[in-house]
Structures are given as structure tokens and as C-alpha cells.
Image (cartoon, rainbow, N blue to C red; front, side):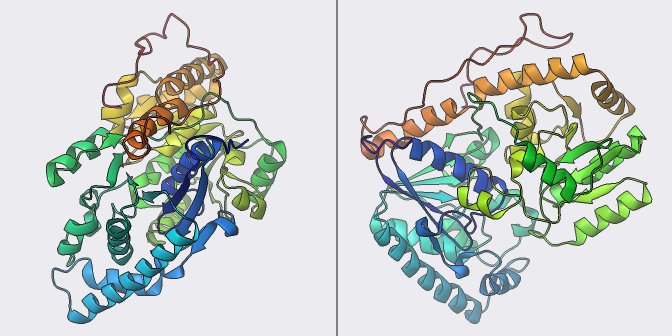
Length: 459
């Protein structure tokens, strides 16, 4: 129920290249929006593609990172140190068009606060980043830049012909702009490279309210990928891109040597091409692994409009998974990690840098690999699959740790620190009363440390 009497009854404008599907940026934006709307705010969406309600969306095709003009620009400026006057002219023509559309969006919905979702961070759409920077400077509307990835974290942006634009808008420094990052390394690098201070807000889930399974949706999902009753679903809940390390999941299923194990990849391929997906199919076939891609769209569970148009949503995928593989080589944070914990699923996780610095010290009970799949790791996975008591102890502890460090309560507290300078102490977000979350047993499992009792200072 939306409280329209709240002092924070603001119009919030979310801006990105895409709010659609189950990528991390779209999911986190929807979680923030849910919290704002719970507090009487109205949320609106500007993007090149949106599965939000049409009456609350401003869809401008030219704002999509896959739009033909933007793709042409990227082909000219990435991997080269020189750009032609034609490229510069095209960038500014598109910037001018998008800035006009942004001004219309701000005026149409009377926007009080802009939340820029990764669009001022990673230069997948240089003209949109420039346009939004100028619109923010011209309107002086309070803005939060929610930064998930920076260009210096991606090899494909290391050589480019738009260094002047990157210094201007990726990210910008403006008096009405506050920056949010999702991990400690990003906070340190942002300060080191640009002098910009930021607030860490990790990815979150509503751990105060455990998820409820939807049998009809889960049945539809299993049928859509041809799983039989006796099949065991090993779920890789990520996009099909190289840094997800999906070849390690294939190696795991091969090593388990059980024909009932089916490796299912829940998200679509295409954001970074299809070559990696084709290579995975070939590798799985060569190793006798039954690999199944989800060929239809999975809805964002926070988007009502998206849920109406799809047979199943992300929350229909997890409940009947038997095990989660998450062998990513790099992650800004790791939505799939939190989702697996949320649904109380055991998982294999690779020790990517953000996990090592920000997540591992908190005391989760996980099966961990360190860049390669050892025999010991395979044995531990097999144990969890076959030992119900071991699995239950693991997932119970993980849920309790995550509830303490990655709940909506953490998001509420951190956002209030950002909103207070903009709108005053009276305009603060509040949460509905939290349900009791059971703590893990007082005696931890052998080799496990007690669950920490406070949120880390960095968060």
C-alpha cells in the first residue's frame, strides 16, 4: 500500500539504456523503486527499452545501447585512439536529441529526483551519458548516480577515442549529484582516479520477507526446458557472457558423472554477442554434459508489467533448482549469489575479487573454488547434493548472514543518508515492521566462524 501522505512523496525518475529483463542493473533499480513506492513516491522510467508500466515510462529507442546509431559510434571509437569529425558530429547529434527527450521526461512527470542507473558509469552509450550530464547540470535536479560498473574495469574500453567525454560524464562531478557504488574496490578506485567520494550500497533483497514459491510458474519453467521428474537441475542463473565462467559449471557437471544432472542457464545470450554461447554448447557436447539454455524471456519479479507478459519470472526458476553454480571471473557485486541465498540453495562460487573483499569475511558457508575446479571441490558438491542435513545447515546459516548485511533495512539506512541533504531530515524512508529472521545455531559448523554481529564499517 502506497502512503501518499508521506513527507517523501516525490516523483523519482530512473534513467538508463534499458530497464527490461533480469540483468543486475534492471533488478536493482526495481528494488529501489519498490522501496520508494512503499514510502509514497511515484517512480517513472526513461530508457531505450522498458518493461515497466507504459503510462510511467518514456521509451526512446535511440537511448538503447543496441540502437544502430550507438552501435556505429562504438565501432568507431572503441579500440581506436582517433575519431573523425563525422563521428564527433554524430555523437553530438544523438546527444542533442536525447537531451531534449530527457527534458521532456523531466517536465512531463515533474521529476524531483533522478536516479541514473549505470548510464553515467560505463560508456556503452556515450551520447546518453553526455546528454544526462548536461540535463542534470541545467536543471539542478537532485541526482543519485547508481554505479554498477566503471569503464576502467572492462578491457574492451581500455583503448578508446572518447577520453575527453569519459572525463566529462563517466562519471561527472556536479554539485547536485551523489554517487553510489556497490563494492569497496569501486569506492577506492573512483576516489583514486577522479577524487569523487561515494557511498557503498550493496545489492540487496527483502530478507525480512522470505519468498513464496509459485508452483504453476515453476512447472511452466521446467516444462519449457524439457526437464523430467527425475532430473536434477544444476542452475547457472546468469547471462551468457565470458566473465561468468560458465565453462567451470560444465566441468563440474562432467565431474559429478550423473546423467540425471542437467545444467540449465536461465538468462539470455546476446548482450556481448553469441560466440561464447556457441562455444559453451560445443564444449558441453564434447564432454557429454546436458546443457540447456532458456530460449524464452524470464520476467523481472518486481515488474508487474513484465510478469503479465511472460509465462514465468525469475522467482519461478530458483525454487526447484537442486544446486547453483556461480563461477564468475569478475562481478561488481553478484545478484545471483544473493538470489541463491534468498531461496536457500547450496552453491559453488568462485572467489572473484569483490567476493573476497566484501562478502567472504562475513561468514557465509559456501563451496568455494579459487579459479579452478579441484577434486576436493567436486567432492564437497557431491556431499551437499547427497546429504540433506549438511545442505540444510549451510542454507540456514547463509540466509541469516545475508539478512543481517544485505536486507532492505541496509538499503533504507544508506539511502536516507543520501536523501537528507537533498530534502531534509523529515523526508526519510521507513520500512514496514520486519519479521523475525532466525539466527544460525550458536555452535557453528566445524571450521566456521560465528556470524558477525554488526554491519561492516565500509557499508
